[in-house]
Image 1: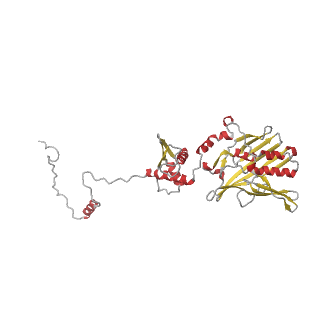
Image 2 (image 1 turned 90 degrees about the vertical axis):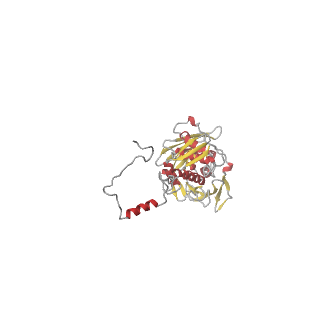
Image 3 (image 1 turned 45 degrees about the vertical axis):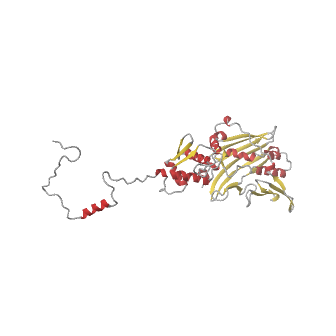
Length: 411
């Protein structure tokens, strides 16, 4: 299944666009810019490889997906390396179907230029979601008249149905990525003309990576190749949102980002289910206007989670919300009933309590005594079966006399 056509819940969204997320690969620009000053071509290649792998440890906590950029959306920023060196970055969504993000990075002071594109395509893979990154980046070092072309490993979100949710990088890039341990990396740097292995790299791309140089049939003792805990991160400098153009990423997604950040939490699946079950069973739900209450008055979940879950349903027209001085009152709409019935996997016979018709009590007949069960029907059926029914004689004339009932007869 193609993920580009699937609407995902907000709790899996990272509050920034994919056009901005590309900047994660530029957070250690000093490594790349330092490559310019290395004279040995092999050592320079190793430095570029180090830069390439330095950006993968930058990612949000948990498994998150950035916004899908709209056509023509762009993101731009600056990186202040030091007081005398600046670099510039811009990315743009140049195609929507299929999605293609193009980007460029320039550091005129050092003569470093990067141009590239990413073409992500996501698919469901059983208990995983795979994002396959096509495209490439070309790194140009003007001083040495060199171009380095790199591709990207695929990304996998494991455990979306059961087990622990984790993010993995895998498959093949210009440098091979393999391993049976999360975030493990194993790779080689080879000389293409002879297929000779020059270096081996291994370790954990979120923690420490090691490199060892091959000399003859042996390797030197491993050295630390990259340790993110000892490296400084250069954050992008972005213009204030109010000064950005309308199709600039942060301004374009301003309200969406605000809505996600205002939740300030992720509602656990079991808590959301408990809230929805209570709402469906009763058809109504009441919550105190207290965002700091540790617990809802009738549910074993924080009161804020109830309010936020209801705000999400209200924004889609699935409930109606009324306010009082101290409480919120939520009522299911017809669309909300169908949505929760599908969410909770309930049969159509089950309806909320507010939609059930009350059973009316038996009211005795006017002017008479309550009948014993079946007595009237039994007498009527027996009369109908009788064959010797006698009627009035042919000369019978009914006579109505006064004086019976209220008042006195008239003269």
